[in-house]
Length: 143
Length: 432
Image (tube, rainbow over all chains, first blue to last red; front, side, top):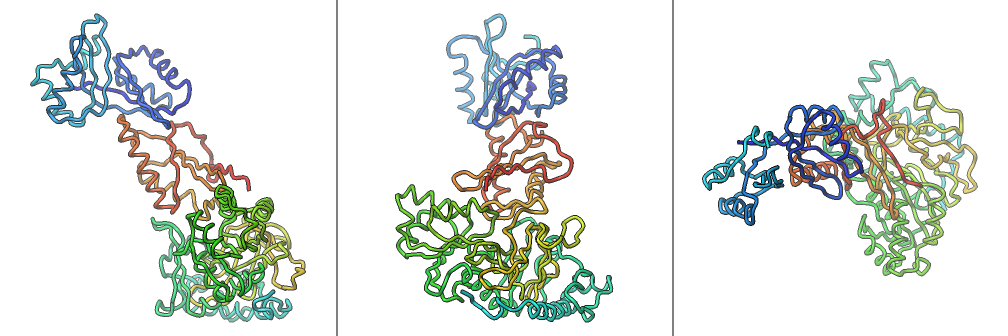
């Protein structure tokens, strides 16, 4: 039920994002979702891609520091309050969100929320119990 | 003005005789009391009894900083610990530290030699001397303190830091002589301006500066801005601390207290003496130290000797200000920093050979060390909180190892230029 995410260390200098996306494009890797967390000193790029291992390999070959972590992808109907209901359930279970980002799938009916929780196992259990749809690796790639 | 006129103005042939006598006695003593020297002398068949000229010392082995580290803490002491009344140490918390000791007699000698330096720089018993060197394991604070008391000056043992308070006290206590690093003197001048204090309104007349490299340009700036006579003085804890050499008010080089230290200036590569007056590495042998004698200590400081007589009347030879280092040691805020110390800390954190670069800047007369570290997978996190915590960990461990605060900048892998060998990892932007 966990989805693999790639993280890349970025210095705050121009052109780095363009370089990363070019490397991925050259290797026919499709980006499903991404987010950048940044501070004055450096940034962390997080990517959900269709070919995780290949992406990690080619980015490393191109000199990037790459990490692989697992995240949870939750699908909710794309309407008002969609995210709020998920966060309420998580809050009630006393679980912290380390970070999250979201995208809307192609049909535009559903939104996909990518979460990294402090307690991943507990979060999955909670989300399941509350009846949320958790996407698998294959489902994310198929979107 | 002299503190010990007879010794400071000893005719050179007499000085040479005194040196030879003391050298022989020192070599004989370390050969019996310090196993490190005893073993090497034995291996090389060196018999101190057979020393007949000062040049004979050239057959003797050098003492390196590493030898001090290898014999940490008390291995090179030549007297039992019960005869040691003071211990000082250089920075370094992960085994890179060095320890030196002083007997009661050593403290008396040390005080006299520092008093000589103070006297030469213009200070007398009538002066109020503010010692803004750190008091503690560093030899600077206590060394100057004892010398100033010996001289009979009124000592303000304010130690380092808190610049505004330093200036307040300087004003209120009518300080006439200041002891600190040259960059700190300029920092004080800056802060005086901020505080609206005119240095010419102070009682300050003399400044004795050391513990870091500086230049004639800095001296001019200090003299002009503080309205004082700034002199250079030199010492290192391994040999004694301050008091090894100091400038007289002629300001044309530092008189080495040769009756207590035998000086050689050698080519750092061939280890042969350089022609008189040429630049080389300063190598010192203590002639009177009891607790911690060192034979041919390689200071790694580059200097040249000035054999011409000095108008001040002292016969003690002069050395130029320190012109550089023959190793990669940096002096930052008066603290000795070796890139290898930084390397060791990073290695412990990363678990692999770190790629890093050191950038030293001087802003507003304050040194700043930035350590640029390439982020490898083992220290990279997808969570910002953890990544920042990693950066803080590096910062804290470096600060605790080096004894000074550092900035850490995380950079991408392979973004720092790769060099063959060492020494290129440092970018020193300081304009002295």
